[in-house]
Every structure is written in C-alpha cells, then in structure tokens.
Length: 486
Image (cartoon, rainbow, N blue to C red; front, side, top):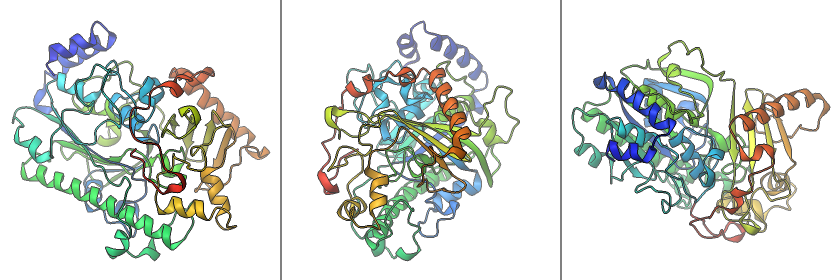
C-alpha cells in the first residue's frame, strides 16, 4: 500500500505518531536494513527436528539455520490455535487483545496494525506465499489483502520483481504438517517406527507410531520447502543480510497437543539466522513468546515497536549484545486459548490462560463446566486421524482409559504440573499441600498479567469470544472419522 494511504488508515493515533518518528530514523540508514524471511509450519511441535535430537525425522534446512544462526530452546506460541497464534505474530499483541482475532476462523480488524504493513510503509517490499494469517476472513475488517502481505505463487516469483535497492519482508506459510496425511507414508518412506519417541500422553501402539511417522513425512516436506528458499537466497547473493526465521504456529495435530496449553501444544521449534549480525552455532535458553517477533523485526529494520505491542524485541538475544535496561525478565512465558473449532453447544469457547516457567506449568480453565476437547462424542477440537480414532475406540481399555481422560474429559479450574518430576504433564498437583505456595505465586503472576494486558477474562468477562462469528470450515465428524479444515 502507498505510505499516504497507510497513514490515513492510522489517522492521528499514537501509532501513527510513533511510526512517523521511527520512519525518519530508519530512513537515515536504509542500506543497513535487513531482508526478512519468515517461514512458518502448520502444526509442528518441538522437539521434532534433528537439531533438537530427534533420531527419526530429517530436517536439514532447519538444522542448517540452527548451526549457522541461533537455536531457541524455549520458544512458545501465544495461542495454541492457528488464527490467534498468527495474529499475535503479526501484531505483536496477545490474542485476547485482538477481539474476534482471538478465535480460530475469525476476523482481524484493520485497527490492529501488522508488522508487514509497518515495514511496507517504511519502504520494504512485502509478499506472502500460501498460508498467511488465518484461517479467517478479511470481509468487513477494512483490509484488502491478507495481513501477512500480498500473495505470490512462490518465493522465486517474489524475487523476480525485487528491486536491488529495496529491502523485502516475505512470509512463507506452509500447509504442512497439517492433517490429512497419506496413511502409511512414514513407514513407506523407510522410517524406523520403533525408534519414534511416542509422547507419554498418547497410546504406544503401532497405529499411533505410524500416524506420527506420517506426520514426520510432512514435517520433512516443510523442511524441503524452506530448503528451496535458502537455496534461492544463496543463488541471488542475498543470504548475508537476510534474517531467516523457521518455526511453527501451534502444536502437532494429536490428542492433548494442538488446541491446548500443554507442552506439545505451545512449545515450538525455532531457529533464526542472520549472517551479517548474528554469530552462528549458539543456543538461547531464555523464554521467548511469539508476540516478540513483530517488535524484533521492527527494531532490526530501524523502527520502534508501536505502543500497543505487548511483545518485546529479542534482537539482543540474537546478536549477543547486552540487553536494554528495560528488557523483560525471560524466566517465564504466558500462553492462552479461546474458541478453536465449532464443536460445542452454542459454538462456545474453551478459554484457558497459563504461565510456563522452567519448573512449572500453571494453567487456568476458565469454563471448567465445558468439554475441553469439544462436546462428545465428536471431541471436535482434536483433529481426526488414526491416533484420535485409536484413543476413542479403546477408551475403555485400562491401558488407554487414563490417556483418553487426559485428552477428552472435563478438567478442574486449576492445573499445576511439576516439570522437573513430570515433564509430560500427566499428574496435576494443584491440590497437593506441598505445592500451595508455588500455585499461589503463579496464580498471582497470571492474574497480574491478565489485568495488565487488558484481558477481558481478567474480571470475569470475555463472553464476546463466544459470540464472534465462526466464519468457515465445516463441523467436525464424530469419532475422528472425518477431517475438519482448521
């Protein structure tokens, strides 16, 4: 969009004033501004990459970015659902601040400024391929394109129109490894199913192992797609001053993973490379939130984050510089969730808020009378597939019953997990006396965050999340036999 049109859209807001000031600073040294390539998978969980020690899945592109750049050990999405997760990335704000954008299949109003628009107004060329913000609709939002940028068929097509004297910001959104999968593709590819580390919250059965292998095939497809982008950057001589980010939007599409606030829902692979300024071969142990991407990209481009952005730049973590005086303590991270699929009576949400530290996960279920995985028998917040089918068909088997309950049964208002003793988050210790002090401390910290970030749920509100339209997809099928587009 033209800069004038963009400022007319912002009007006389504080955001417009802050952006105008930042533009003047950025334009004083335009040649130093890096290109930005943001590559995001659809439903890929940590630690499923070679750089994290997975012995089965092959991720040479991710591993290359990690070895030449920085590997993040504790990177967490803001929400365990595609649309709000991507909205938080683009706006630098918590999903609960984005109105309808806090839900899956929703809208993101134009008043929520997104970093591609800000960079475009600052002189960047912007583009997007495949899945940008969404799923959702721009109808009625005041937007004329996807918030991630104008569409291009491929990165190669995008580069063909790139001026040599202009930086670019490009979003590559893969559709992998979202379901559905080709049944048996993992085994057919030669993967050793016996070597797969089955998460403890899933039944360790050949059908589940095969399902994970099929998921791995699509992780590898995404990795190959990013590999092609890396080659194109190399061939064009653009790699040196290009920030390349490779990550995912939420967790693997399996029971008790995607659409929850547990580890395999929210903990993401993340590697970032920027040869011009970032020394390679480093690991970052600090917690980072995906709300931090937008302010990081803006700072790298010489701009200041907008006042409404709740994320904080992590540029100093990349460069190894001393943190700014006002840098936040990165010893914890917050995650949340509102409505995912349309799978409850009245199209109701299942609101969650959580805080994750190195020692604990404290999680609040704000409507514990509702079904967390969706109303039975469909449990539509769990994507259909062999693992879901196995869990439902064997729910009365003594070896499976507890895992079924963990994925599908109603949950208490508070959950607390001791991650040192229980990294799989299977044993809720919220009611144990020896954890009372830790629970109180984390509950207070979560309450303070909710209040400070104007969360509608902070004072018992948030009913609007149940009433925002669900603008697409079709209702999930019972017993995991069908597939909902999410």
